[in-house]
Amino acid sequence: MWVVRFIRKDGKPDEEYFYPTFSDAEYHRRLFENDSSDLYERIEVVEL
Image (cartoon, rainbow, N blue to C red; front, side):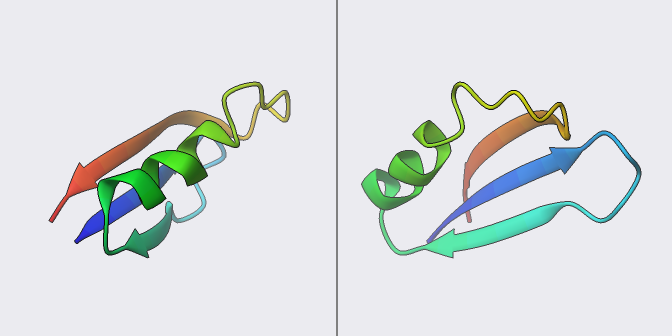
């Protein structure tokens, strides 16, 4: 199981999205590579 974790800058709870495979999780993370919203400190892909 893999989780994509969006670490927020504004102090609100982190957002977590769960995926069965690394490739699914990595696909989701890549969608935000050029994110200009400045909402997130970082985005992690972590194996559980």
